[in-house]
Amino acid sequence: MNTALLLQVLFAGLSIGAVYTLVAVGFGVVWGGTGAINFAQGEYVMLGGVVAAVVLELWGLPLLWCVLIAVAVTGLAGLATEIAILGWGRVRSGEAITLATIAIAVILKGVVMLATDRQTYGLPSFFGDAPLRIGGASASTQMLWNLGTAVLAVLLLAAFFRTTRRGTMLRAAADDREVLQSFGVSFRSTARWAFVLAALLGGLAGAGLAPLTVMSFDSGTLLGLKGFAAAMLGGLGSPYGALAGGLLLGVAEAAVAGYGAPAYADAVAFVVLLVVLFTRPTGLFGQAKVARV
Image (cartoon, rainbow, N blue to C red; front, side, top):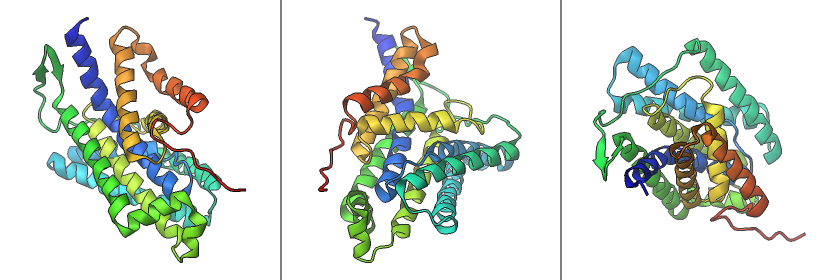
């Protein structure tokens, strides 16, 4: 076995898998807070990467400031999503919210397309271009940022859900929204937090992805689908499941690309999604719920 190639595949998989993790966690947060699948999640990722690159290009700010501005802009996009769907639209059911997020995704894509004139963007590596040499393989220093960001985000979110009042509300909304509302907790309040958190995670993912690949107005659709596959693989709504699902999916894609079939790498997510849906719909870490009728 070629150890250097194996390590190269592992490093590449962890780097992109960390991005999928952040996208998957975003899906889980909105699912928990609203009972809906947020199909605008991929557009948040696209927006984060494009905004960070545009800020760097226009103003030449330090990379950290570019990332912070991009994350803030995507957070505002998440807030606008909640206002548009639950405020102006007065949508409440999970199914209707899911359909409405498809419209939001199309709008976000169209706005970015018009604003950027279909240009592509990228960022330099946050820690310089010199690669790390490990066991005969080279690893981008960006991998360390992406992986560290994903792990830290998962740990912080797990602590947020476990130890804070707002996090407890979001978990309760995932378990039984009607009971939560009977205690006087507004559904819009939990939904707003869910959409803003998901958008912040998407912006962070996009900024971390921009040094690895070019970003443009149409980058979000495929990223969203892959993040959803990672969320389903790990268990929708489980932060640790999202971490496992994202990293596993990233490594699987890198393995297919690295061992001779790069044209089929993008299909891995769809195969994984179909297998999970047919064999274990709750994912690796998800738990089936028992409902009384």
